[in-house]
Length: 242
Image (cartoon, rainbow, N blue to C red; front, side, top):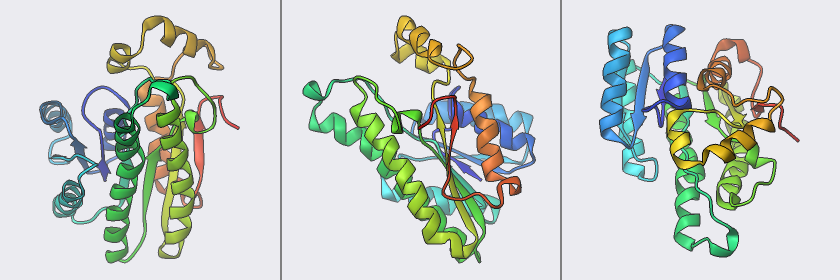
């Protein structure tokens, strides 16, 4: 399986670890080479012979093709693609620049498209079967000030997931998504003020943010044969949904 944006301490690395616990062979990917190397070293020590890493910028088609090609070589085939790469930011629409809008959509939505397309082509070439799991967000459903670019991208991921699922159902390939709300990790605390994080946590049913592993468990379910009859679905890992 391949997991994008898998370096660091967020959902991607939690997904990689959770699936390794289930016996998967995992190719980690991230645009941050140093953190990627550290993640690969850490996981390879715990799961020898089942972890590889390939740097990839999901906004670069050549990088995406190289990632899928290398993953196919390492694992023999690709059965699961987890598209976790995304870019956020806070900016009111009235102050948002074209470059800010374009950058968030290119990473979060178009990057998901590029990686999904490449993985699906490989899965079809293998004879079909497999699963794609995209990381969406409850912001694809609800409004939040300053998040127009990110929310638009995540709503796009949801719609893309549903349509892509129909395109490849005949090949026995499933395409689903998770929609987390607030999943706390150290990097998030660096980009969002503590007071704002506390306010967002109070909106959750349990009065707290999710832990990355709690989202990763749902991703692992969607990637597994336990979800064999689920496709085109977006599962909210939160009490927040339409």
